[in-house]
Length: 462
Image 1 (tube, rainbow, N blue to C red):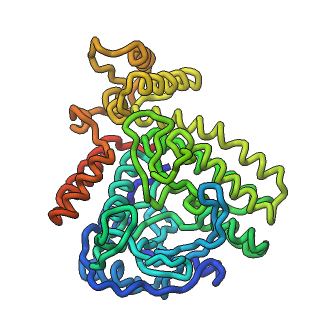
Image 2: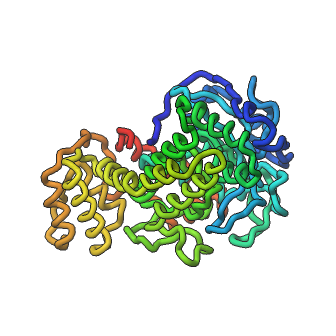
Image 3: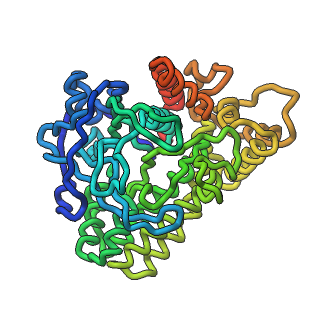
């Protein structure tokens, strides 16, 4: 579930230290030639009491990585393993990022500030540890759009250009460099548990399970903490899978090291939003078999959660873990319906009617090639726009929607716009071209404003 920003004073709480020195390696940030502030997310900085930093202070903390007061004395490159496109890889970890600070927000959640592009670590594997400026711009757009559409996502907290020329094989080079800071509810991944299981460290596994339950979920461990944690992760990750579908989002790389134990989406590389409800649509050019295609994302995340269950066998019997895993498909379907109704802005009429609505909507979008964003925009609150050109599938949706009541007051001017706010690859490239060719940042800033306006119009939490 997406949690709204709530202002809070700065409350440092570096709990990661309780896990000892097995969770990561102390590292230093690269010494960049320049630090040019390109984006600071004051809306979310206010949730952790950092909105009052001057730009110079911001650059010192998030470009030069001077430690925040009473926080982590040195960054940690976290250790983990993971399945990458279903192939197990024990040679990974934070290769171009680190955990920099932890603090409490207004909901008393423990939040992390972590980096992308901050330099080499013991896990860089011959990489340069850097982030392209384009990658940072793309991450801003992804996280802002997902937040507006109710997805439980990390937030792009800061983007600073660093003045280096980077060589990349998948985009014109040399290209500009950046360091990004992400605000996220933990960076404990399924791959973190996989590493501990591979090492056979039962004591560390129990410690990590306890940390995840008590610190991240605010739960009191019961008689079977491992199964308790798996049930919570199944619930959150099934919901995340559904939220991707309703947003029309394709993450692109749903490897087990990219799945957060709290069910929060993060780490955006080859992401895309699909214009149409196309189950085969993929985001990554290297996903040749469509493993992480739009329509297979729930399957992929269920498989990843299965790897968490395998890891937890180190300290737990199989039957309760299997029982938790078997909940995933039903939870996914329930979340899909709930989020579908949320984006449509209508009240539930019961399981059978709601399921029929979702199925009819999917058929209409597929068979009549209705763009996803346009469909939800036009039918928000159960609206039935007049048209004699609609096919039978769209008419069926309108007929079902006629029995639904809206859940919102459609007074926000966004709902009077003729076209919805979308984020298709062509616009992403235009925004980047303005930066790359003219150093013009206004298209990016205007788009962020437009996206946030859409988020305000949706108002209630998904």
